[in-house]
Image 1 (cartoon, rainbow, N blue to C red):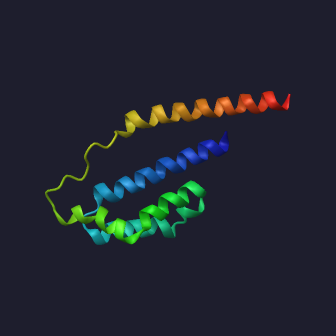
Image 2: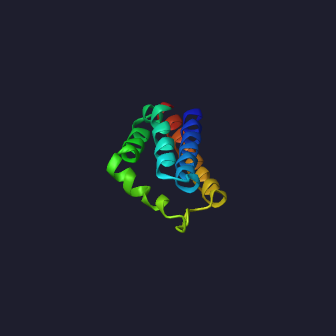
Length: 111
């Protein structure tokens, strides 16, 4: 249960950090600096899934294409992004439900 909560907390933090890069960066250079900071903070070392996310996000050609809109000041910084207030509770409930299923399965198997 603790491990699941820890992973969930890390997912939410990483999501917010990536959202910050796209919504609050004022230039491509600033966005690339924030992106590189994620790598140097060791997000790719947390587990296999974080490694895949960071690897995709760090890839240079892909990253340059993702940040091209920062050259244009009139392009809106956010589009159809899900509001954290609606997304997080539903996601947390689903993960908690999965954790309870797992706990009951493990307890049934060990009896």
